[in-house]
Each structure stands twice: as C-alpha cells, then as structure tokens.
Image 1: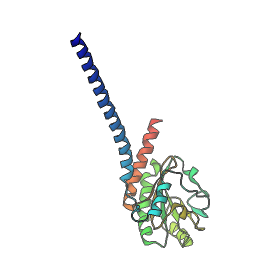
Image 2: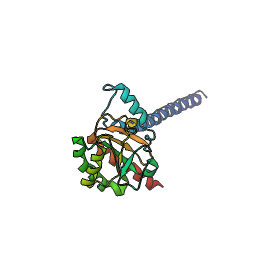
Image 3: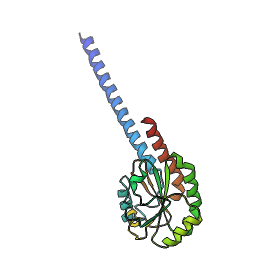
Image 4: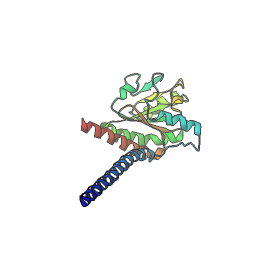
Length: 209
C-alpha cells in the first residue's frame, strides 16, 4: 500500500510539474509572438523620438493606429476625378508624401516615388502627394511638367497638413489597406521596406478570404 501510495504521489507531482512547464512554455510562446509583432513595428525607423521632441512624439504616437485625419478640406486635386477622402482609398496601401515644389529634397525624391507607383500600383499601392500651402500654383505646374500620374492634393488652406504633425519635407506616412495610419514620419530610407511589408499583409489577407 505504501509503495502504491508513493507511486501515486510521485505521478501527481510529475503531472503538476509537466503542466507547469507546459503552461510556462505556452505563455513564453504567446509573449514571443506579441514581442515579434511589436518588433516588426519597432524595426521601422522614424524621424522622431521622445528624446528629440517629446510633445511631437506623443502626438505622432497617438496618430499611429488610428484613422488618418480627413482630407475634406483639401482645396484642389490633380490626377483624380475630383475631391477624395480615405474611403476612396479603401483596400489600398497608401504612401503619403508631404512635399513642396519649393523643397529641393522633395523634388529629388519624385523620380523614386514615380517608380514605386509604377512598380507596385497593380499590387495595391497608391502614392498620395500632399503639397504644402506654399507655392501651390508652382506645384501644380511641376506635377504636369514631371508627368506625375499619382494623386496630388494641394493643401492651399493649410488646414490639413498640421493635423498630421508634419515638421519637415518630404515626410512619409503610411496608411494600410484597412484604412489605419500605421506609420507616421518614417525615415525616408525606410519607405520601400514599409511598402513591401504592408503590401505583403494585404496580399496575405486577400489570400485567406
């Protein structure tokens, strides 16, 4: 009897230990998956940080993961059939380029943005240029001269761009295919990486439907 009782007790202790180890492993796996998702986001370099400008960083952090500010107050558009808002981009990945014709780095970036538009357009990418209030008329002429085909919004009232907390040009923001502003003020060198990542997400979700 004593031997049988001892065996039962040992079996009970072993079972409890196994459950504890399994539970820990499952918890660690869940934590790893969560950390992996977070790491994917944190792996994208932004052009801002708490150390540089805490107030702006808080505003941009609040913007990420939400619906982007409305475009209804955009005064005029190019390469569209009229005024647009985010519902018109439903199902698309949108690279927002905040720019100005007066800005040399902005003009220098246009050829690559045109390449992205042509390369990934059929995969669901839309490049959306939002031009500053300054030199809007010159911007319209520049769009025509350069043969830019993707949509351009001209913030001639200056009411839209400040809602995105833009502080330099060009600034790149990204809206995913679900209409969520995923990344605000991404480092320019990261643009291609974010485009490919968000398009891959879109493709994977379409494949599951």
